[in-house]
Image: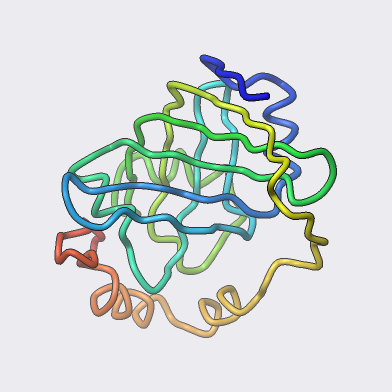
Length: 180
């Protein structure tokens, strides 16, 4: 059943690398909690206590707004195929925007991706596993390509304009810090 760890073990990293989807949870000091599913090739385990996540342009930008008030973040991975397991990574995160000095250092871990708006670095404080026996089995077919196609159809100026219209404020009206 469930166990807690101070860092990722090799078997945890192998499990994470096999997953096609993960979930990100954040919360502001007060307001709506955000829980988002993520896919595409957007997550890297850097070491046993560090994960990077490439945050692509989307309809909202809650994570960035929440990080300005509350750096707590949880990433969750579920085994939808094979042996059941749920793995949660708890820690404090920081956002690096495209205009930050560390952007070039961290973006090198990912394939070039149009519409990349932030990189999130999670400093892991706790790893928790649980059984996952209640998670249904699903067969993975493929990653969706609609977001990538949409981003590839836009110029850099069009993406920046989209950020200006859709990504500068959270659902609670709080700033996200995205450079526009």
